[in-house]
Length: 158
Image (cartoon, rainbow, N blue to C red):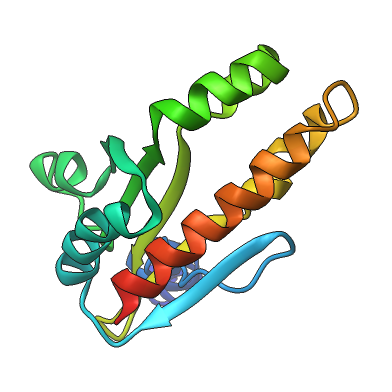
C-alpha cells in the first residue's frame, strides 16, 4: 500500500526523463531565426550548398546528434555550420586581431518537434560589435557579412 501512495510522486519526478530535452528554437534579439518546411537533413544539405551564394565556404561543421545516438541517446537534429572566407579573414585581422576569435561565424540548423527544421544565426554585425570600438571600419565588414549570411539563408531556405 505505501508503494501505491508513492507512485504519483515517482511519476511526477520521472517526467523530465520522458520529456524532449531540446525545445524548438525561437526568435532572439540579434539573431535571424527562420523556420523551414524542409526536414533537418535537407536543410543541412541546402545550407552547405548555399554557402557559395554568400561568397562563403563551409569551414566547420559540428553537432551532437550522431554522437548522442551512438550512446543510445535520442535528441533532435542539431548542426552548427561555420561559414567564412579568406578575404573576410584578412580584412578583419588587419582591423582587429581579437575579432578573429569569432571566425568562422556560424549558422545553426535545428530539427523541430514537427520534423521541420529551422535555420538560425547571430547577425555578424552583432557578433563583431564588441570589437568595433577599437576598429570602427569593422562595422563595414560586419554589414557585408550580414548581407552574405542573408544570401546564404535565402538560398538555403528556397
